[in-house]
Image (cartoon, rainbow, N blue to C red):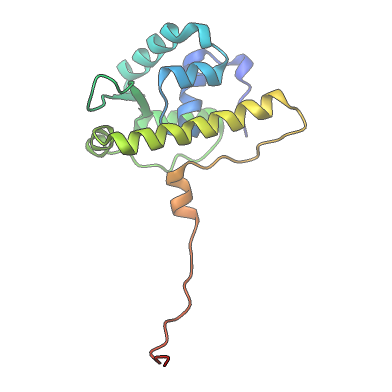
Length: 157
């Protein structure tokens, strides 16, 4: 169940967006919420969420990497209530900070977030398209299993 974003504050919308995408920059969040001209406002809202311990700002290894935000356990629980979903994702601050210091991981993760944002915006733009579920890479790793055929010990000549 998706919340009615028309009735939600921007801070609540950001919590729900982070719950769906896992990681977002202020620019990505602004694009998703249709507030591209209000990136500074989005940054302020993210700062407010981090101050309330609902989100954490991941500082990258260099000044060229944008600030990336993700939910804390408290934020995931709250977003789960807002969205009517189960908050099952664990949160370990040290692991999140380690991820932030891996520029290849962060670039890939932000690219995945861009795809998730594009899918959501496409569904908003074209009413005939419905997005029923979105999976982050982390969620896909847990859901997809590949079974391999049993290895035979016979050798072929």
